[in-house]
Amino acid sequence: MEARRHAALKDSIRSIPDYPKPGIIFRDITTLLSDPRSFRRAVDSLVHPFAGGRIDQVAGIEARGFILGGAVAHQLSSGFVPIRKRGKLPHKTVSMAYALEYGTDEIEIHVDAVKPGDRVLLVDDLIATGGTATAAINLLRGMGAEIVAACFVIDLPEIGGGQRLRDLGVPVRTLMEFEGH
Image (cartoon, rainbow, N blue to C red; front, side, top):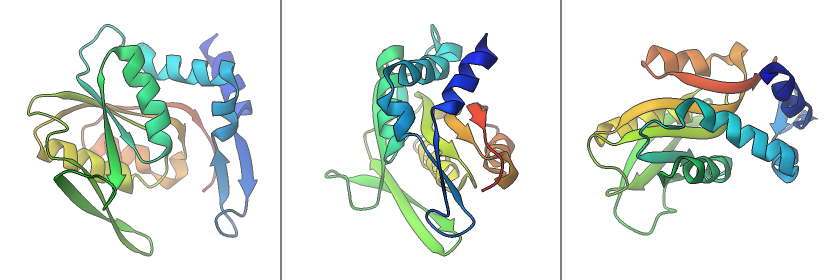
């Protein structure tokens, strides 16, 4: 039954070839989000393994991770922590730089977003290289948080980001896989 549900979710993802550059197939979750049944199924599937457990905060990575993470936090009766690109948060922040294939970027959260010992669930739409998610994990751990798991709607396993997170000791939950980049 779960495999059928996930197949229906996969069918709700729009694939856009050659975006943002030739050879890349962009996996667009906006079509999933705009379909009430698919959106609900995705959120329920992300929440299910953690329902009834202690999750203090759900951390969502900008920007689609905000949509999914907010819904997951609501279902788990947890707080929500936005992880944003540098310069987007109004209060004192803690930041973490990470490598991109063409340079570096930086993410940040408010200094008071998590407390030492908080159990945090990391959420985003897609795991590819794992660079941003790894930076988010390091940032949260640096603040004393325990990362319960990292959850994504889509995994691109050929790129290796999910394994990169597992190598950091973080359980990874994904709802579907796509081949390629």
